[in-house]
Length: 261
Image 1: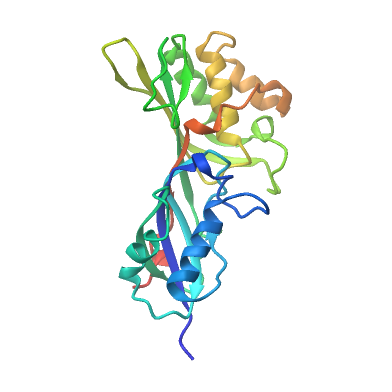
Image 2 (image 1 turned 135 degrees about the vertical axis):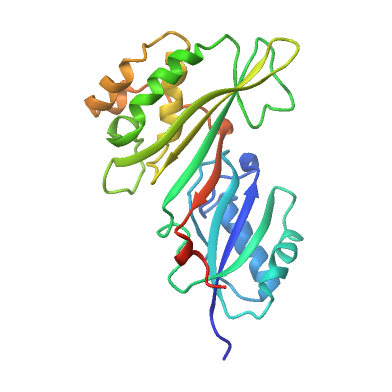
């Protein structure tokens, strides 16, 4: 009998062609593609655990997953071996042997997401799958002021969409930044939100960004953020931002329990 190993993978993917990360009957998902590739490489049917259940159309630069295997394939060879079986939409770029108790989702301490907005009268064909297109200018200063209300330990009921299995709406947001990243010579600019928290409710980031976009358009004031949070009413927060602009950037763990070799 070979010893069971707990393998931690770090991967990127373009979420455009997937119905989210988690396996769903009748839909193509990242988890399903990972499990199929692992079966081909190791000969074992495994259950992959992902750190974040990204929605349909949401991308990842630093998704983390783990699975258990008795395969003897060297861990340093796994990324290249797995990537052969993906259609360039997924790339595993790191594999490590983790401790027995490591769980990609439950062991996570912080997650960081980004949301990208292309602000221009003209669409950007090369960015269309990875940004939300906003034709009119945004008041970035107003959005920055509103964003401050979300930092700290808060009840995010107003920004929690139906469908979550979480038991509490309370989360701690460590940072929420709004930045102008770059401009082009036609006057267009890329505006990004970056948010780090100890965890996220279902569509929480997209709901927050949707609200902040309304602030940026002048449809709400920065002070409305605190009032909507306090109301604990999802109907008051407005529409969620589109999935295509959202990306899971990083998942952070306590180093002692992350890997042991």
